[in-house]
Length: 264
Image (cartoon, rainbow, N blue to C red; front, top):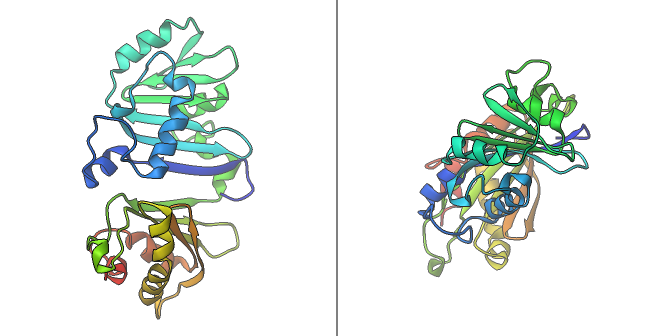
């Protein structure tokens, strides 16, 4: 997101991931991709886990906004019982106020916890929690933060994108996503990410991903800047114009030309 007060905005789709990867909603987080496991751990460590407001099995989606140099704020969407969550939050004895569709609780340390219909919100800043729960897109909302004047857009598909087995020498990615960053006066930069089951598989895939991505981009307005391996993911930085950026966003969906380029 650049050098503004907002470092990152991320969205995690637990429900779609479980559906696409055929992961049961009942059980722990071990079968989930690393990014989702990491998100769940951070949520459970926050006051949102206080008093059993929700269970990780009930998570459907999470929006995470990280201010520069500070811990993130979270909005959780889930199948939990909001009435029961409010009753548990009331038992804390914290001052509360009505904020949009939420009951907003003011913690002694200055943080805020919001409980709404199928939604939970937490921020270390009560004012930020209020901006999120009162969200209507106006000057007091999350979109008014200076850091969001530089727009970041991402698209991902939490499903295997090459289904041929590794025995045939083929890729076996679990996750593919594209994130675009627009900064004033510059062309969009895309980060293309393919996640694998482990670091060794990601490292072995690097040349294949680079070749497949290059064949997809051939003759277009986008150019590969670097391809690298980060943990269990292969990451490519791609410079582009608006047309190429839009094409990359569309390319993460099933049946796309990019998927065919990455297949064996």
